[in-house]
Image 1 (cartoon, rainbow, N blue to C red):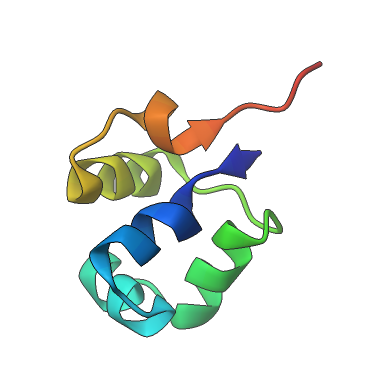
Image 2: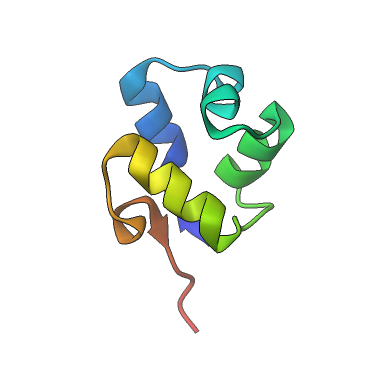
Length: 65
């Protein structure tokens, strides 16, 4: 699944480590999310969207079938 996580993180001037702390996940998890190697759980997707004040659809773009 594609996402806009890196762009949103950059807008806030946060490092991957800072975002990881805010989400209570590891920096490696943030990196895997940004590179598309990992799709977040639904609770994590909601936390990410809430943190940035966006809807889940504004952060995550589902792959086309």
